[in-house]
Amino acid sequence: MKTRNIGDAFQHGIDLLKGEDSVDKTFCSQKNCPDQETAQPAFARAREKVFDVNRWSDVSSLTAKFVLHDAAGRPKPSGWPTVGDFICLELPGPTPENWVKVIEVIDEERKAGFAARPCADPNENENRTEHFFTAESTSTFRVERVGNTLSACQFGENERINNQHPEAGGRAVVNTVIATTGWLFYQKIQWKTLMDYLLE
Image 1 (cartoon, rainbow, N blue to C red):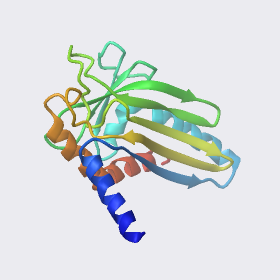
Image 2: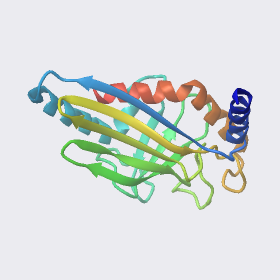
Image 3: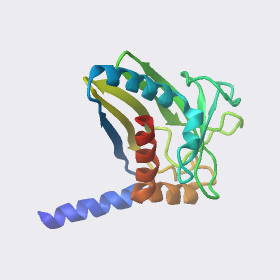
């Protein structure tokens, strides 16, 4: 039984590298406030931060650069994301741009955030997905208040390496390297740092 489990895990790893399987990842931070009077304004600040995507780039020199674009693909230097907007993600180092499209926005009394999905570069006529994950993957950023406790989470769902033609275009190898590096350690640096920032 133990050998079969190890074998299944090994096969899962191979399938991930081949872009034939997917994985879900979650990174969360939590903050306990002493009372409601402290929790309410703390959540209001977290709400502003989760929607102020352009400022995410200032969190750390180790984390990615985020640039919000409108539905036509033009930079959106101010304002919050709306459904149909795009976000360009630039990782540290000589890597290609990665694009996602905002597919959902949540803005409730005690919960706020948005979800995005990998997509094509809105400024090009190419139909390939300009991201290291496939278009079936989603990433959700959410802050929430339950009582006097605040949480900030990034939910990566159905993360599948974009290394199959034609969706990957000519970046199959670099997508594999970026995705596996992220799964091994960079995602934890990126998303845990960002989640901590949202609750500061």
